[in-house]
Length: 154
Image 1 (cartoon, rainbow, N blue to C red):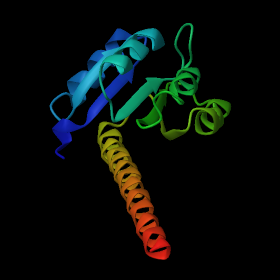
Image 2: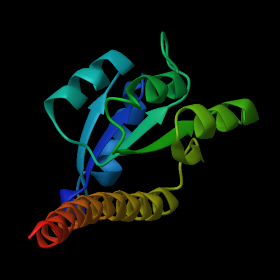
Image 3: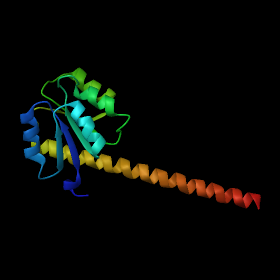
Image 4: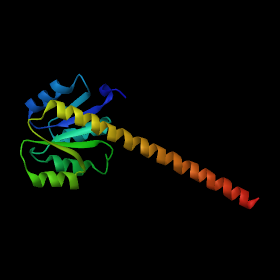
């Protein structure tokens, strides 16, 4: 899959950050932005995203709380956290509660973020492929068990 087919949802309450992210990455990836967790959740219902990047400090809901709230319904997308604050507790919570793949400080380093988006998509793709192969394996095992039982009966 080409980089252009990597679908990213970026959530940040600061419009200039959303614009800067889009300006930096829209030529490389399919980028959709949201200014709140509520708006992001609506977007998740409408389309599939491979990577979700969220700011930590937003009004109403933090990035970690957002990731935690969507984890059960949308477990597949790789989650990344951006914050302008070096809060070690937020980092620990992000990893433990929101199952965050990577944590970045603002302002982000464009090359580092691009590299990690590519790596995150690799993880996403491998997980999806693993899930599909596991399903196929279970199906083949069931058919094999059926055939073995048929042989034992006859």
